[in-house]
Amino acid sequence: MPIDDAISQAANSLAHRSIYLDYLMTQVFSAPTYKMLPIVMCLVVIWFRRDTPRRAAILAVAGGGVALVIARVTQNLGPYRPRPLHNPDLGLVDAYGQSPVALFEWSSFPSDHAALVFALSAGIWVGSRGLGAFAFAWSTLIVCLPRLYLGLHYASDLLGGALIGLGSVWLVARLRIDVFLLARVAALYSHRPGVANVIAFVLLFQLATLFNDLRLGGRLAARATARIAGWGPEPKALRDESIKNARATAAAR
Image (cartoon, rainbow, N blue to C red; front, side, top):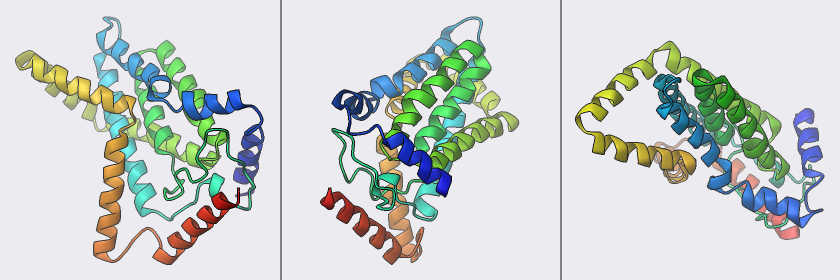
């Protein structure tokens, strides 16, 4: 898409000019503490504040889970799309501190980062307009824009992920899955508060780290399933050719 290419080139035009700006994008904003923890803290506030419905926190987490599954399945089983950074026609440059082969085997569309953070932000918005506005702004400026700057995603990847996130929250609310889960969580806290707190801790940790370990495991499982079944997201030759081009581009830099 010409618009996608133009946006990627414009966003990447500032890369490799300032080591401070590049390190802010590659090191600071990629760290879970800065990227995801503020959004997770909003969820905790929603859960413990007396004037906000706890259902909103459940809605955010359930919607985020659904969004992440949809995004990962689409990435793993859909048509392979190389990252903008690995598209030689765009002529993007590596930022200081960025690996030239970053995510070259991972399909670009859709952005699972955008899917998760926009789902969480939508749920937070239901509980608190102020916290929701903050979460949406953080998701856009701190989570999504750096990935555009670094050539890790096209704008359409981020937009597609955001729509998946918003749609997943709508689906969870429509089916009243959040109401069902809230009743189960309340019962668990009533009878086994220790177990409930452990589960909450693990879940918040996974959210803060963007389920990195689980996403990697899911990707490996999908590839193994595709190989066993004799089908995949695209002909193996096409993927191999895309990876070969990415490696050649990285080696030439």
